[in-house]
Image (cartoon, rainbow, N blue to C red; front, side, top):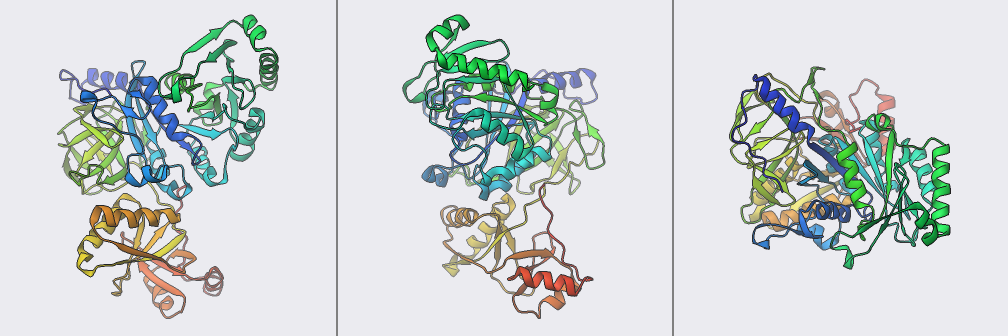
Amino acid sequence: MEQLTSANASSDPTDPSSSSDVATEAARRRTFAIISHPDAGKTTLTEKFLLYAGAVLQAGAVKARAGTRHARSDWMEMEQQRGISITSAVMQFTYRDHVVNLLDTPGHRDFSEDTYRVLAAADAAVMVLDVAKGIETQTRKLFEVCRARHLPILTFLNKYDRPGRDPIELMDEIEQQIDLRATPVTWPVGIPGDFRGVVDRRNGSFIRYARTAHGTTAGSEETVDPHRAETEEGDAWRRAIDECALLEGVGADLDIPSFLAGDSSPLFVGSALTNFGVRHLLDAIVDMAPSPTARLGTDGAYRPVGSAFSGFVFKKQANMDPGHRDHVAFVRVCSGRFERSMSVTHEPTGKPFTTKYAATMFGASRSTVDEAYPGDILGLVNAGDLRIGDTLYAGKPVAYPPIPSFPPELFATAHARDNSRHKQFRRGLEQLEHEGVIQVLRDPEGDPTPVLGAVGAMQFEVASHRLEHEFGARTDIEPAPYKAIRITDAPTAKRLRSSAGIRVLVRRDGTLVALFESDYRLTRLRNDNPAWCLEPLETAI
């Protein structure tokens, strides 16, 4: 993992040489997120990227001081117990003289809000599909978010070493379901479950792979002459060549401008478990994915990467280091050069903010960082005053668009089992709300029992687990009967409070919301009282 230090670099944002240095460093950055359905192989692919970049000696084990430190993108205890990603993770490493910021996201729909926040910090995405399942309903929303933001997407058809569906069929599914034209860069030789290697459609070469023990080390790759490939692979080779001719005939060729516009997706085929095709994909991220560019502010103006420092908070996470029980604000650098201990302005308050404790992240591990550039992800430790969506800047003021929340779809009440731990319970809920794990709704008229809102049921499980194990407050979280939520105002709230099956609560930002036990009741009230304030919550797309 690279330490981003340069003691002799100019720190004056008005110095032309400083702006040039920033632009040069920004051009070396690739910041991308990996999205997929659970069990599609996203976390395995993440670890194989680290393996091929030399950041790990074996898949899953991070190369570090004295060889004693280990870290994985799934660092949370609950993630390791269940074998799924629950929270996003940042992994920074170098590859081919580029600084790669990899954002590993939760695959489960219940944590799609966390993934959405991460996508706001990414310049591109890698969509991992299980060749046997294709696009699954549970994560289609994530792909739609990428399309809505015109985020460039690279597609990886994973698990081709196992039985699965025809890749041409999967290409059609991608186009039909998320309106994204797949343009294969590599094409498989052999059917799913009998994977021989791939044809690189850019030059017609055949790359044959050799398995390694459990895929823990980088596998050897042999480039085979087409004439020899036809002799040795027979019908599998001829079928692959015929399919490549078909793809060329329909114009399914790599198109970089449409990829960068978010209209087409370069497609790669492989198996992360056996390391087949991983290097092709990692090379494509460096060669094709965009480097950081000017970012749009709320005033409608773009802030160039060579401007003075700016960035925004897209994630908060507490207790990553159990020994210190601290919390980290993750900041995407948008412009300028960051220097540790520099004083910046916290845009929402206009107050100065000192960045003394800054780190570059590698899963749960961190290293002190002295400099960072556009595209990099900073971990600001114990930055308790920062909130998700906040902008930090130096020099000319800027504010980046806020990151909206998903409207909650499920509701539950929360009670501390031990009243003597109520202080810890309250502090834990506050922290989880700041992180965006759950939404906490409270009664403005005095009922102390909070109502929790979430997109999926597993968010409640995570909240309960963390309240007990991180804050020492065992908690009962019980389902509440509410089916819909609407923003309201004080006059409407006064009328609603007298109605059965409706509860008026307040969000952290002071907004009044009404919860309804019946969708029909909500519809009837809106039809009968068109002047009442019953507005849908903002959506993230």
